[in-house]
Length: 383
Image 1 (cartoon, one colour):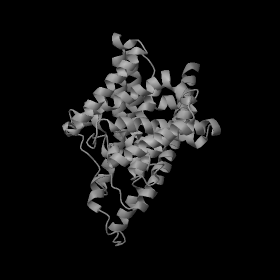
Image 2: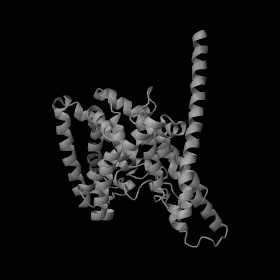
Image 3: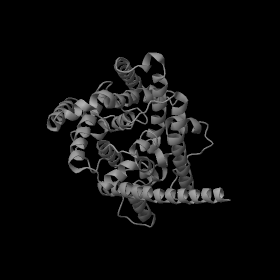
Image 4: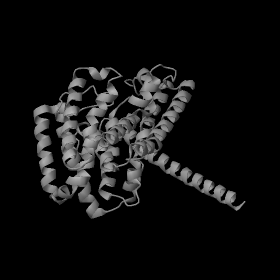
């Protein structure tokens, strides 16, 4: 979700077709999870919240490029922070308009003393709340680059494995602290969150350097079967504890080690399926378009999945008694309302289709703007 590591990589000159499928699967899971898993792609064996956020970080790490610290920070500011702030501002404007029209109150005052810290370290305004992932990924990727600039971590192979072991230990410690309640402190939360996700970013780097060539040669049936077996055993033994819901707040962990196991099994399973499909089907336009626009989908889908809720909301305002259990007050104050199974199912398709339409429109506008700028430059050169 990063227009540098997630989007630049997605739009690279030579696409990695396996990861095109993997990214498309991941962003569909994001929307479906926010609609209480109405589609549920194999979620009974691989629950989304047991792996998919870690998988998204893994994907970003896979496309990591070694750069100088200053160059890397500049790339992150241009490719991730600026787009993130652009979407955050758009969210603030939309929420402000909705509030002043008397429709819903999803607006959060920018005058709040904690607004800037929340925006740059924790999460954006609620209407684009899913973009917490982008700001987390920004700091994880910058931290990773800073650590790799330290002489002891510059060399590869041995230092890679040492960093992996150390980062997993630190990640487990962060989960222990979260389970003890430290995540409720907004000053600690960004650091605890970065410590948890850092190992998965590094796993993505190591996967590309060392492991992918071996994983690709393992039979899909064998590796997927092993992942299924492990997850079934864990689900039977630990049940809902395999899930770590809403890692934006890091408050729902029930184990300090399970998230690392289920994140690996879930990611490996879907990687092998993506490899299997990509080698037999190849490039598919719709899949590529979804994969190429994960940033836009992540930023905008929360507004669009609420279209069915708005429909119910306005019907109730008009005096309809058809939806007696719809909580009007809750919806007025939060875009995270999940109503009936039917509206959640409709919300999934609204979120996916409308986000893609928006991405298509923005692509057209970007192309037009580029053409206008080129013409202006050509005219200036001719004078």
